Length: 195
Image (cartoon, rainbow, N blue to C red; front, side, top):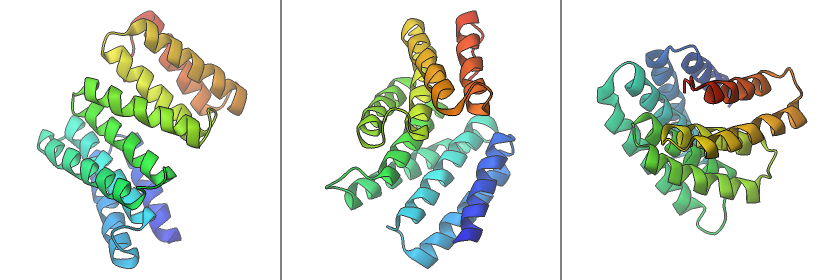
């Protein structure tokens, strides 16, 4: 399990470095290994499936647009499996899958649909995880960026300002996530937001 967790983290790092095709291969290997070891409905397997789908969407956005339909189908399947498994309660893995599905929709150029999924995810995370939870703040940030893409600059600015304030409170002024939140806000206010 630790090896697969490390591989999954490595896949996320590859995405951050813009090495999307490599990330796709790493996430696929983790997903397939977890399916074999744990079964398709295990939370770790579904998390891996969701990360694989998101890396496909990122690769589709940046490298090979032919990957986009695969990414959406896989994100949706992950979400359906999670909802089936967690029909009676909202599980953190379900929220992660919902968040990843919203990110996939955003990367696929469907910001209206992304915003709806992101808002639903955000509301559930606030209730389940709390306002200052890192996943809640990430969802708030993603939602704000999506609103900006939809031309709702005032609403986006309010949300990104709140994310920045909350990250300052919870992580401190110089934390990388606080600095990223500040950069997003500053870029939005100057009209140069790059998402």
